[in-house]
Amino acid sequence: MPIRQLSETLIDRIAAGEVVERPASVVKELVENAIDAGARRIEIVTSGGGKSLIRVSDDGIGIPVDELPLAVRRHCTSKLDGGLDAIHTLGFRGEALPSIGSVARLTLRSRRRGADGAHEMVVAAGRPDGPKPAALSDGTMVEVRDLFHAVPARLKFLKSDRAEAGAITDVVRRIAIAVPQVRFELTGSDRSPLVLEAAGAEEPLARIGAVVGADFSQNCLQIDAEREGVRLSGFAGLPVFNRGNALYQFLYVNGRPVRDKMLLSALRGAYADVMARDRHPIAVLFLELDPALVDVNVHPAKADVRFRDPGLVRGLIVGAIRQALAGAELRASTAAAGEMLKRFRPYAGATQGGFADAPGRGPARMPFGGFAAPRQATYDLGGSPFRPLGGAGGGDGSSADAGVGAADRFSPGFAGLAPAARTVGAEPGETAAFPLGAARAQLHGNYIVAETRDGLVIVDQHAAHERLVYEALKAALHGKPLSSQLLLLPEIVDLPAEDADRLAEAAELLGRLGLGLERFGPGAVAVRETPAILGAVDCQALVRDLADELADSGTPERLRERIDHVAATMACHGSVRSGRRLNGEEMNALLRQMEATPGSGQCNHGRPTFIELKRADIEKLFGRR
Image 1: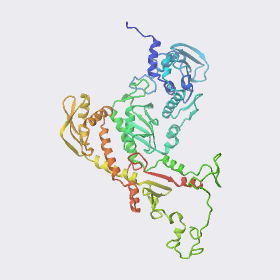
Image 2: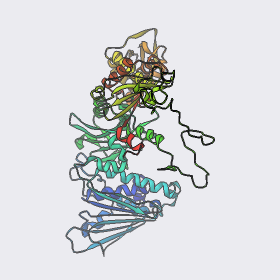
Image 3: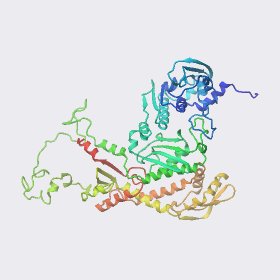
Image 4: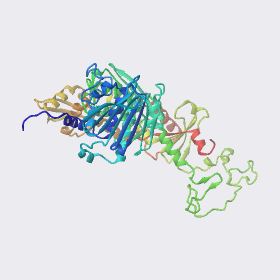
């Protein structure tokens, strides 16, 4: 078959296969164009999950009538005056509109700011028509109908209307976080309306809270760090405020939303010590650097980027988040406290005078007991905590009153404590001096109840002490070179030459972690020492994992993680066990050590070590507020 030039329509459809993957891709490209045009209000309307209709309207500067034909031609753009090394806009290739027009019915209507009227271009199956006069007040409106009608095979790979509509919502939310000054309105017959009002620069969490959730502002740490011209800002969630997936991780490079593997790996590494592997942190992070130091032209959808110095960027993310976590005040997640308050909520059918009958379910029962029948209330004068003092009404010196003081008589909750609880005395003013307050009791041999200035704290003593021991072990392990065990015979690991080169370059750092290796020919390394703390080691698997990690991120974190895992196991077995009775001094000492140890708000497995209830929350439970 002879070589021939493809038609423009076929070229556009091939390009559309890379740029337009699904309806959400169309929305992303059109919204980015609107932002580049200086829009302050963007309205998106969809139908059929975006397959039937996508309409994006904005109040930007608009397109001159003589440039409308160029706008729907490939590689025509107004955004590359400085070349690929100086990209300051979201779009730059000039592929979006012609690619969309090649697989759908596209209508582009625009009115240049200050122009007498609007004009429109229509593109159907890659064939443009126009410009023609049209009606439009200002800005630009792009309407896309019957997406992929020209390539019906692509329709078979799309998901349900609900799933595609959800993907569009996610795209709009991700872009909206980067431009809080822009108002977004997303409506349509296939969705519930979404309106994100414009927010000022003085309210950085207003837009983020509208997208991520209102609880995020109370469970996050502000990040602001800079290194060698690269600035990182934003907010990172507390380790105990996490999710089961990574959908709530929002990363931006020069204002562009990305899903870059290296950045996601750095975020995961920053939380490696404080979060379980099956949980994911919530974070909104913005990277700002010279456009010449990052390549955004490596992915058709511009979702991936390449940094000139990826090690610098990764180190900045990991270091800044870990420093913020270590320097933050001891804080408990409000989500944990909220879940605890839910457990204490009165019965849903309760009324002010008692418990109402649930409709269709018969007489209601109190949720705190399993009473088979109502009990007749009787008044025992001798056993009542409210009996008169001084022997009146039964206080005749009998055994019932022996050893019971006035304070006990008026504190029925502490007069007859079960063996599961132990009380601790404390001076009245000592709670104000410490964030975790002063210990008041130990419950069920594992939970310390402490009184703070404006509430109370419940501490899981095993989880808390496990974290304290772990941090002490890490400081001892990584504060100096780790001891190693010499292998009787060096183990040779065959590797590709480039992997062997990377390991040889990192040999000094690996040596400080207890792994001694050296180059052994062009395509192998010889392992002579392994970290003593790891015991028996599969050298082949360990070295290959390290080679893969060095190729991916440039740092041998896998070895450090394995060493930290051993330290975590040792901490778990060496910490205070559940069921051990602690006296007042031991409990208060544990609280003071928690306050002085970074990361003590969660255990090695990512679970919270304490829950805090404010006095206002407690008063709400009793109807005092």
